[in-house]
Image (cartoon, rainbow over all chains, first blue to last red; front, top):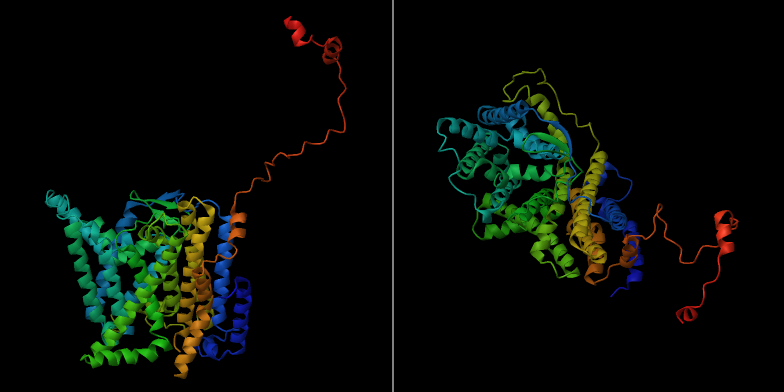
Length: 476
Length: 88
């Protein structure tokens, strides 16, 4: 066993040895692209130091729970017409995207459907939710359509539309939302590239999801289904709890403390799986673009081929396995952290603690999404400039911007890397602060609260280091 | 093989802080725990409300001379009779 006193010097020795042999670090593609002044792995160590310093600062300066209440301040009342306009805008965009997918040119870069779904919707909406609150609730096309049908139905057949015919089962929790997100991730990361980027395939799947949501809302009620089973609605709502802006049912917009919406997050069956899915699928996106996966994936592929699968199913099964393993890995690390937290005081059960600290993973999920997709948002997001004028890719020039081209020099590789590092570190410091606040509210003994947070610190450092490693390995 | 080895090595380098922390915690060590607990404990003193010193303050360097009604009262005051004598 290494004596505790000698641990820092041993770690320092390892660091010096690594600096003397930087061959492995220079293998990262990002180094060549970004020309960073220090080895990339040193960012991981620096991030760990930032987290440890944050942990010390939180432990000594943050002595009472600050985020268990939202401390709302009323800002203004959202006009009812604005909500209606947002609903119609959302439905209109949905119609446009589906129409472009079916009727437009079947070329991914020339069709609005592909860029809108994978960039604006999948990456832009999480960022907008964190900045402006739960705006997807107003924009959701399926929710708006279901509400419109309910409103019209109540006028014609008041009794039939008075209440939902079925009650949403409590045991189901948010598992349908988890399934929806896993399905979307599978489509994006696993499904054969030629098909997943095909505009008509995306349009058909969007329409199928829309109809499934309508059916669910008709059976179980619009709000119940929207809050539990709509994968995107639940996901964006979860991220919007980080935001400083929120709106109540009466349309009053409030300002609140950053992330103070998260401690009050309802933890239903499947909520932890949902957060782990968000982090795990993004993790797999990074991993599948790196050298480790590219080296090992053929072995997995041949394993499935030996079992009798043809080439395409074998590839999809190998990638599916990787996706599932990444989600399981994230869930496993969190579970280990909770087991460690429980070892501090046996008064609370593992399930109770894992529910209690589940919200601390949400900033990490957002950090992972932002870090992994930032370049996509910045670069491919510009494509909306010309796609707005020519959504079908048939040569139209509605707004006069069809000649607009993506400016890849808008941001350098080094700047992207720094944004990624900053996003990951900030997200994990946010998670640490939330965990510390919850520990103060949970434990009456300060020493137990601090001890429990050593374990959460380990979880955060692990996620940060792992995330940075994945990002640095992209393209190697 | 070489690529795989360097990838694994870089992974270890990246994850070293997390691994080190995990090892320390698995050994049931919480480095700096006492210091943190001491610093986190609510302090008895604050800038605005200082505690009273346990040692009595030193006598003031100046005293106010007895005068007026107090002077008359002191001069007229007599020692009361002993309790036993008063009882008999």
